[in-house]
Amino acid sequence: MISISSSPLSLMSLNISSNFNTSSSLQYPFSQKQHQPSKNRKPKHHKIACTSNDTNQNSPKEQEQKPSPRRNVLIGLGGLYGATTLTNNNSLAFGAPVPIPDLTKCVIPPSGAPVPINCCPPFSKDIIDFKYPSFEKLRVRPAAQLVDDDYFAKYNKALELMRALPDDDPRSFSQQAKIHCAYCVGGYKQLGYPEIELSVHNSWLFLAFHRWYIYFYERILGSLINDPTFAIPFWNFDAPDGMQIPSIFTNPNSSLYDLKRDSRHQPPRIIDLNYNKDTEDPGPNYPPSAEQQIKDNLTLMHKQMITNSKTCILFHGSPYRAGQAPGKGHGALEMSPHNNVHIWSGDAKQPYREDMGNFYSSGRDPLFYALHANVDRLWSIWKTLGGKRKDPTDDDWLESEFLFYDENKNLVKVKVKDGLDGKKLGYDYQKVDIPWINSKPKPASRRVQSKGKLLTPRKFVDKFPIVLDSVVSTIVKRPKKSRSSKEKEDEEEILVIDGIEFDSNIEVKFDVIVNDEDDKVIGVGNTEFAGTFVNLLHGHNHENSTNKKKNIVTCMRLGLTDLLEDLKADDDDSILVTFIPRYGGDSVKISGIKIEFAN
Image (cartoon, rainbow, N blue to C red; front, side, top):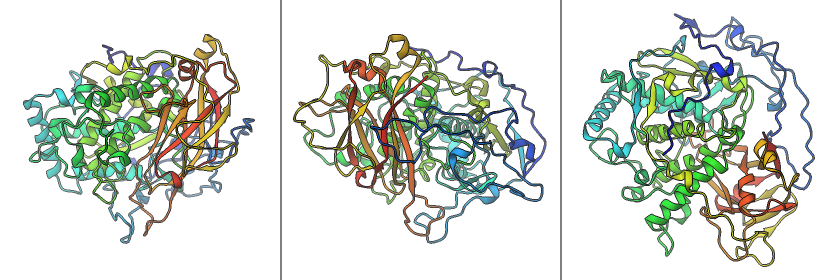
C-alpha cells in the first residue's frame, strides 16, 4: 500500500510567496499591473512544442522557434481592453499566464444553437484574492464504495439544499454545473484577448482547474449543512472494489441520482477504462468477464500513471499560455481514463451523450464531482511515485488564474500555484490500496520487430498528413538508440503525434500500437499498446446557430522508454507505429509524427 500523504511540491521550494491578502473590493476591470509579465523574464524555448504545422516523420529536423517579445495584456481604465495592441493570434508569439475569464463577455448561445443553454454565471464587479482557509482538522475525502449510511444521509442532505437554492444563486447546483460548461466549451474569452476562447481542457490547466472547481463545490456543500469537516467522496475506479458506479449515486430517490446515465452501465457492470462505444453490441467477446475487465483496467492505470507519465509534460499536458487558442495537448490522466469514464457514464440515448458524456452537461451529474475527486487524488499519488514526477515550475502555469464563487457568494480569484498542496486547502484522501502499481504488462518473451504478413490489415504510409479512415502504419526513425541507464533516467523518449485535427462535434477514438506482432491482435493488456486518443464531445456550440464544423488541432505524447525496453527494441533504428481507428477516424487528420526527448 502506498501512502499519498507525502507532501507535494511546496510553494517554498518554488520560491513563491504564500502571503496572499484578501482585498475588500477589487474592481473589475483590473489594473494594468496585475496582468503584465515581469520585465525581467525572457521568452522561453520549449523543446517539445505541438503545433498545427505539418511535419514529416522522416524529416525530424526541427526548425528552432525564434524568441518573440512577451506580449503585455493592456487593460485600459476606460474599459476592459482599452488600448490593447494585439493583432496577431499566432500562439507562438505569446507568452504569459492564462488570465481570468472576462465575465462581461461571457457568450450566450443563440436561440438556434443545438444546445441553447446559458452557462454564464451571475455577474459581480467585486473580486477578492484567494486566502488560505483556517481549519482545525483536515477534511478527509472517502472512497465512495466505503461510506456508511450516515455519510450518505449527510451528502444527500447537503446536495438537496444546494439543489433547492435559486438558479441565480452562484452556490446553486445549477450554477455549479454551469461553471464547467463556461470554462470548457467556449463560454469565456481570455481577459485582454477578446477573440481567444478560454478552455481548461486538453492542456496543463486541466488538473489545476478541476482541483479548484471541486474545492469550492465541497466548501459550499459543507456550509449548507454547517459542517466544515464535510468532504465529497472519490470514485475509486482505479481499484477493483470501486470499478462500478458507487451505490450512493444509484438510488433514484436521492439527490445524488442523475437520470441521464447509460442504463447498460449500472451496477454490477464493471467500468471499462478504455471504453470503446462501438463494441457495445452483444457479441462473443463483449463484454469481457469481470476478471478480465478488472485486469485490463489495472494495466491501463499502470500505463497512464507510470509508463506514460514519467515527466510533467506527459502527465499534465501541453503548455497553454495567454493569447493561445486552447487545445494544445492532453496529459495522460486526462486522456485516459478520465475521458473514457465520462463517455462510459453518459447516456448514449441522449443527442449529445448527456450528462457525463459531454463537457457542457457533465457537471449536472453528481457523479462528475466524485470522478474528479479521484482524478485529483491520482495527481497527488503521481507526485509520490519518484523519478522526475514533479509539477511544472513554469511561471506561466503557476500564475494562471481562475474565478469561482465561494460559500459566501464572494467571487474569488485563485492562481494555480495556490492549489499545489491539498492539505493547505484543508483536505486529504482516505488511504486505500493502489493495486495498479504492480500491474505492468508482461514484457515480451522475444525481441519484437514486426515483419512479414500482419494479422491486422492496414495501409503503410511514409508521407503526412494522413486521414485515419483505416488502420495505418508508418516507420518512425529514432534519433537515439541504445541509450545508457543514465541517459534514460535523464531524458524520456517520447512519441509525438502532431497536428491531430478533427471536428469537435464528433466523437473520436484511436489506439496507438508500437511494433505489433504478426500473430496476435493487440489490446490494452499487451506491451505493444502505447496509448489511446479519446475526444469528449464539445457539443454546446456557444457561437454556432447550427452544427457548424469547429475543428480542434492538438497533439498526443506517449512515453517510449519503458515500452521499448519491454519489447526488447531499444537497439532498433526505428519503430513501427500503427494507428487503429475505433470511431470517428474518417474525420481525423494527422499532420506528422516524430520522436523527441524530454528531461
